[in-house]
Length: 116
Image (cartoon, rainbow, N blue to C red; front, side):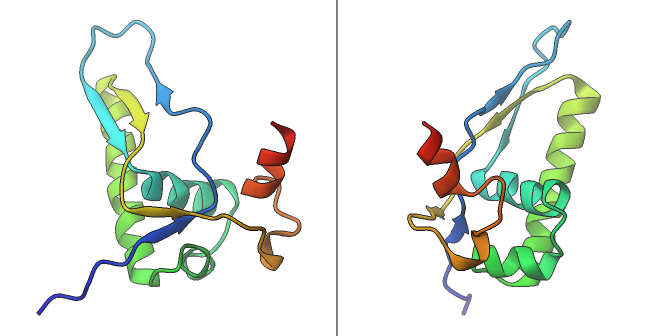
């Protein structure tokens, strides 16, 4: 019997959710889920380890590795083939309160909402 699906916790939904290549003849669309975006943000932008990323998202390290692999393939497809990238969807829970470990995070969801 399969394990029940566990929702992934993300800090916040991105403000920019669409990237369109210039000089493209509309070669298609790649959908990057919120969880895939969050893994890219935490691993590549925030330079966290997979274990730290897994803790923040409330999933296992192997789940982070699998999400990261899928997201990288989608982004490579979009870049190589001139496809539009849209971010959205997936079974995620958006963080609704500041966490102690986010006190010094530049992209914390609470800090970003306070500016709006």
